Length: 112
Length: 113
Image 1 (cartoon, rainbow over the protein chains, first blue to last red):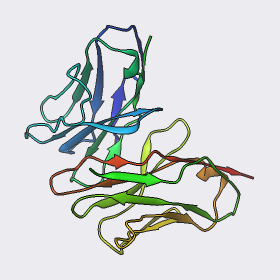
Image 2 (image 1 turned 45 degrees about the vertical axis):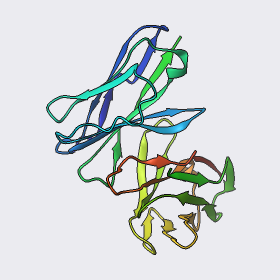
Image 3 (image 1 turned 180 degrees about the vertical axis):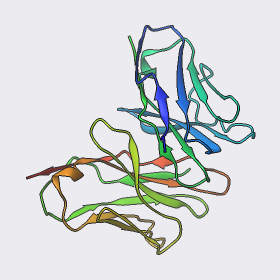
């Protein structure tokens, strides 16, 4: 079956602009995660959704970052007023249990 | 908080050499342990996992044993191939209501013919 998909694969934006990154999880997976992969910080957890429960936002680095998950499926990560330090690869993962997570190919964000 | 420490790379090996990538962890509760692999130009893939002490995860000739006494989960392969060239990440989930992965910084492996 189809894996986790993310769009766009690459995004170049200017400092101060808002961006939206999209994630389509594996069908039937109730849990969805966002991570960020950057040279300086490695792989960092951002946010976690599980079913209809309130999301765990403990990894979001600032209030410029937000995410939503509509209908328990597709998720959008929004970064407002982007800064150069936001440049990274943003990874989405989903799981059917709280154990093994399957990752998408990522969105490479470059902030000029 | 939870943390994962893995050996720094890069690691360069000749084909058919023995591979060990060390990984140690600090976690509350009873963590599950993972190795993920990222091939060039591709996304993260689960390589193997172990969910309790003394479990051995294995896949594609790779093995790792969950050692609670030494808080370690070292990755091993007896004979590496050029196709194993990738970045390897050790990771954990601490459980007890916390399901995000905590990753090590990754070890880049290059296998030369």
